[in-house]
Length: 396
Image 1 (spheres, rainbow, N blue to C red):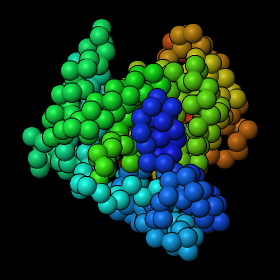
Image 2 (spheres, rainbow, N blue to C red):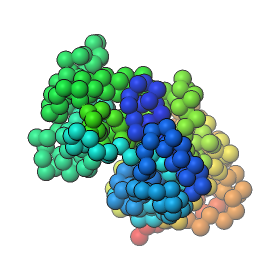
Image 3 (cartoon, rainbow, N blue to C red):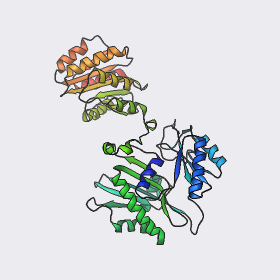
């Protein structure tokens, strides 16, 4: 589950990580009130207005701007709230901005120049260990840094038996070229960041940039956080942070109906029971010349209600030119699935795309007869190749 920047910073702050302070606003007037409150608390006269969407590269799309007065705070907030923000990580349509973060200006003058670093904590799937990835090239796309200057990216793997050790935090601070007060503050920052990652059951903490201020303080100026969905049952406070407006609405609806659905860019809708069979079905579609429009696992109880809900989800995609139903009857009987398909088809009225149904397993022969005798525009298949040939035929 992805979080907004302000939510990620709340988690970081709760674990003792120094953050760029700020308040969320959903209207221009709330933004002005937030700026006034920040001025009272921090003395800052300038404020950074940041669009809160689940996408990186917000500054490139005009979603991050500096306000030097309260009038500018209101004007900029009015411009950003409600805009469709397009970044390198969004679709061409962009993402609608519903709220902004009004943050303190932390690039103030001092004894030294501020410096920006990159730091993230994530799982190295190759070794099965957590890893801290960091670079002196903060504020830039890490993909660009990896491509153009890979020697400036460092990795520190953490032994799960010991956790992050003090010498590793010092090594990170040393590789970033720090010394004195900034060196000590960075070691504390790294330790607190790693604890935040592990203790919040996260799959990613990315801070870009980590800032060394002009008075040698280390803080998180941004925060991209992804939580492990499988651990949310024991993180009710974090689960409440979910913003469904930022997610694919068809996928949200599917989740509410207990269906495992992932939207894809294709022309053949899939309805399958079991993740492994779903992957094989998607391969089958590609081999037949089509492209899967979705991943949809209806689970082991493919009754009429679930089948109808699945059909409705698939047909929300205007790009779908055909639907392939591929069910293996192990726990569930194929004849019940077939009857569910027939009932769902009748309940929904006219379905204007071809439907190919392949049912194998318990009572598959009865299921095929039910489909064939239904009088509906549904084609049945027994073998994988037969189903592939029929998909190819309807797409031709």
